[in-house]
Image (cartoon, rainbow, N blue to C red; front, side, top):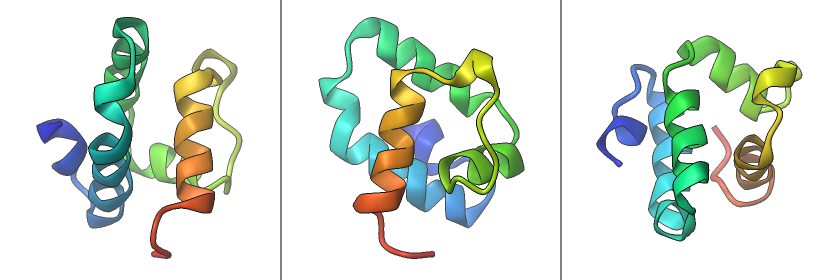
Length: 79
């Protein structure tokens, strides 16, 4: 939870922190692992992927990434 709210860029802090606040408790262990792996990626790449400015690489095209993209598109406050 802490890492999701303190990623480096304010935009990602808001997007990933908001996602974590809403969904982290409901993720299973494998999904949490995938979420944590995403947090290790660069802020710029993550922002571009979850805002659909660029497609996520195939290795990161999984359920959690799709949940994040849907959250950003449908639930997060505009940035």
